[in-house]
Length: 133
Image (tube, rainbow, N blue to C red; front, side, top):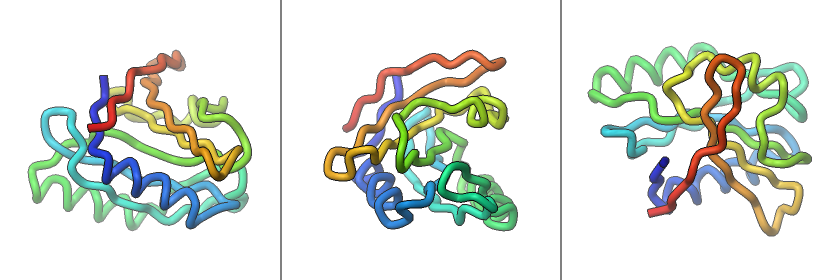
């Protein structure tokens, strides 16, 4: 089960709305599997309406900052502005961190965003319980 503070969930949704109609993306870090920090990352994909690619320089800085602050990778998040909150085949292919949760936010109905958490390991998608604390 992934437990996320309500303030972080609100930031994930706000980020998705701010970047609409493009996909948002970012990283959550914390301790003991509870996210305490959110890092919003620039989407540098050539087609950001249907894919995301995290800016590599920002990613490098984030992981350096996480090490400096003794934080662990908790989750990778991104939005699906026009589709459901479920990993696409591309999301599965690019799931390089099997220890991380993958959080997807759907803005199919912008007034009622839907957020789900998954594990993606060896190409297998498993929905995980998400508790907002």
